[in-house]
Length: 104
Image (cartoon, rainbow, N blue to C red; front, top):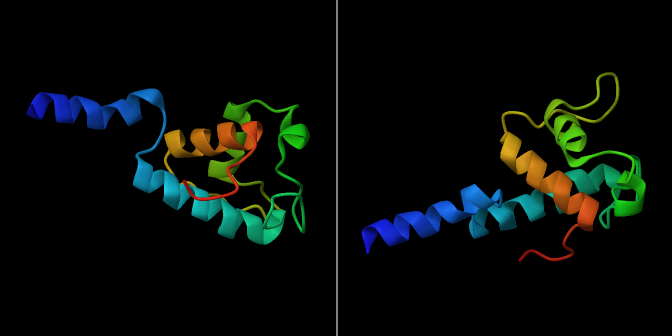
C-alpha cells in the first residue's frame, strides 16, 4: 500500500504536472503577478498579451527560459529561484494552450 501511495504521488512529477496544491499556487501566481503587467485576463497591459495566438511563434521551452531568466533591460523579471524549470515549462505550456481562468 505504501509503495502504491508513493508511486501515485510521484505520477504528477513524471507527467510534468505540479501537484494539485502547487498547481493552484501557480495559477494564482500567473493571474496575480504576471497579470499585474500582462493584464488580469492576460490580454495585455503594460506587458504583451499572453494568449495562445500571441505566443504561437515561440515554443514552450523558449517561453520557460524567458519566465526563468526574464528579459534584460525590460520590466520582465526573472522567476528563477521562485519557480523550478518544470514549473516554468508547465506555465509556458498552459499559456500556449490558453491559461485556466480559475484556480483548479
